[in-house]
Image (tube, rainbow, N blue to C red):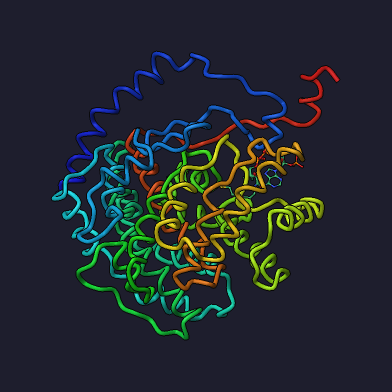
Length: 433
Ligand SMILES: CC(C)(COP(=O)(O)OP(=O)(O)OC[C@H]1O[C@@H](n2cnc3c(N)ncnc32)[C@H](O)[C@@H]1OP(=O)(O)O)[C@@H](O)C(=O)NCCC(=O)NCCS
């Protein structure tokens, strides 16, 4: 058994009594109350999920297993000659809660290499789809198509016990994670690079191999590493993470769950916002004839967007109440590697202009930029101008967090999810109307 699985087993066994104690002895302790506004308003702020993979503080931003983004980027082992950590090390951290040693990461890199072969029928299916199909539809379909590979389903059908279910779930999760970068790169090269597929490199780590299969030179390997790490998890209540968790709670295998979570990520209010940001900026650039707008000119574009009833993509957040540290991390990368890029300059003007306007408009609870405001800029700079593809990159990263959550859901025996609904008449009665 590889070190990581052994370690995971130990961690799971040590953790289980904590969850059992909470449920058995303290199950009736209240952690909040739910209002009519929350029941109708997307359950915002209702504390009804438990996860240890990450925690999102509204003012501090995300902590992965207790570590902030700068701490993760500093502490996780780095691939030789790279600025950014191995994605595999981040997988290790999310799964076990520990920062891995160099050797532990290398072992995981090797583990993924053994699992990375994508069955040919997946590519055949992608090729049979109309080429103008959205890449997120292709990505979701490719994941779903692999459902027949599920180890969990085989073991479930053979009668595996509830407390052992995390083990085949782990196997499915690792098999899937190892394949996702190759599937993403295949869709990209097939759709946008004249169907010139680049096979995987036998020696490279996940980030390095992704850059290789995309056909983009250094430092795109570091861009991929940064991108997958930053997008991996954002607590479990966001649409993609929650969808994955919800589907898995029915004991659907991770192929069903992750395909579903990708569909949630494909919404413009969630993951697709990164594509929307670039589309919006391109619209501004077209109108400006490529010139960087002044702050006054940019303000007009922002107000025009708001007055036409649209949201400003890349700004606002359901939980965060400050600038997203994922935005900051990418901004620092841009300042170092592409300070003079015109789109980066646009984004910089937006950073100055949008928050005061959203405050003046008085609707958005958080006027500050989120991860999506910055991420497309980097991709564009390194040649991925087909912004339809950006959410696939988000999806590869997000799968790391959602899969880690699902493994732990199974390990801790979380039951099927089933909140209760009320009718409008019942709410009116409760309200005394
Ligand atoms: C992320 C988002 C969906 C969160 O939604 P939320 O939790 O409902 O946010 P709020 O509670 O602040 O929303 C209150 C109001 O402000 C509006 N608002 C929030 N962010 C806004 C933005 N960036 N531009 C314009 N209006 C915005 C909402 O649409 C809502 O309007 P309504 O009352 O007319 O329905 C929202 O901020 C948004 O649409 N942002 C743009 C899309 C985006 O960047 N998504 C990626 C998030 S990581």
